[in-house]
Length: 206
Image (cartoon, rainbow, N blue to C red; front, top):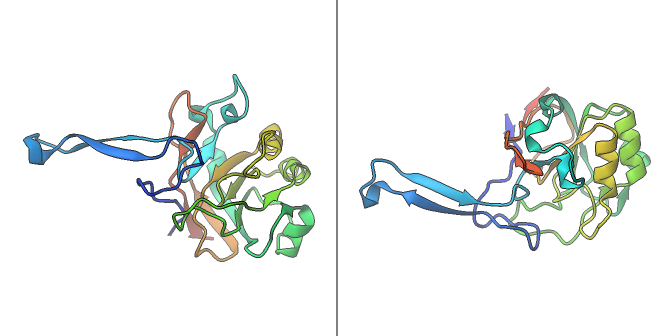
């Protein structure tokens, strides 16, 4: 199995301006307690996570209503490390993706896995995202911080995917993952009222 999750720690880069991860102790054995009890604070968007529709729409489904079937099953990893800018269907075909899979992970190597927040990263065009969802895509996962560009305010790719019934994983660690077919297990935590949920994402060779 290949763990493609980002480790959450105080050094994990958060989206600029978001709530970073921090951890402390509410009880310790060293201070006389019978157990150690930790407590942490973080935005659910720090590290590997699944976005919920609530992230981009009021009164939409939160993290506790994300469908598990989207996050389990066959997945294709496509290598776009050398690509910059907008990703179209032709880009994916040139990278070896002949047909739309149920789940798709894009490796760009513009990730926070090395401890720094990237300046920019390639993203699907909204049209490409909508076409993939219409073709049966259930899940798009990326190793970069967002399926949209860093400075996007419209978040058109988020909307295109959610409109088409597809879901989103962000901040994966695909650094050592070759392109190809795998099985994915990436259940989001069931937390009511959140716009995203932390995920432990794992690949297994198909």
